[in-house]
Image 1 (cartoon, each protein chain N blue to C red):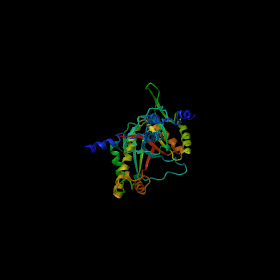
Image 2: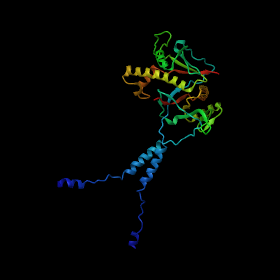
Image 3: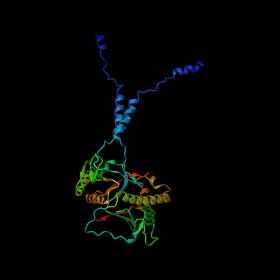
Image 4: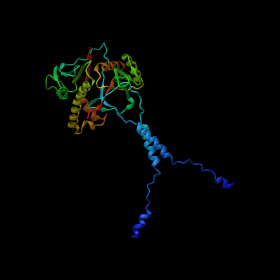
Length: 148
Length: 181
């Protein structure tokens, strides 16, 4: 009996917490590195289309986004279908050519990801695709969510 | 003298609150992080054709025409079809290997052409493209299983085996320019 008691008394009951700040810092650094603060303010409404056979794009820095959808007018109202690149709406579709060409010069392996509202008509997408072809940005991606 | 010196405050900074600060920052980054990987259907657009060089001749049998109209109705080689059937039609067309004189000569000759109307809804088009991609994915999976005994998805991107299968079934998908109006 006395032997057992002795053993219990000798073991320390506390978990060492001195390494906790290190662990927390590691997690902190991980999240700081992976975080992308919201890069654009969306001015168009986008409900993604669903598809089954989709691929992931791992290299995020190659991707440039084109948003196509009905314009948000505030108070829940929707306007006409517009094209948004970066932070601005592009009113003249013909201007996309120059914007994309400049992006292609910066990043020769550019992938243009088209984030298109599912209820858009295909005509505007064709216009944008024509501009992309003129700009020489031929790798595109139709952004879709996985169908469940 | 000596006593006075000893009475001075210690020079180290108290480090116990460091963990709290780190926790606060951690929580901030946890909240703002969105680890969203962009997913979608990849495609390579054809370059703008020169006016000087005529387009390469394509034999009629090697071309599968898929037409989608503004109401979302589908026509495959002039025959009405449902979106759900397109996958099987594409598989049959691509994997014909010259057996049926109306279908493609070989998988590397086969071209799937998708033509839409300007008013075709986008999600119908994506469904269509999804079916075509699905057909190719199934064919590649089958070829990979026959040849290497492993599913296509498990082959490393850029590896030799993956390229062999990709060369067997190259995705030749043409997005035709829609008619005006």
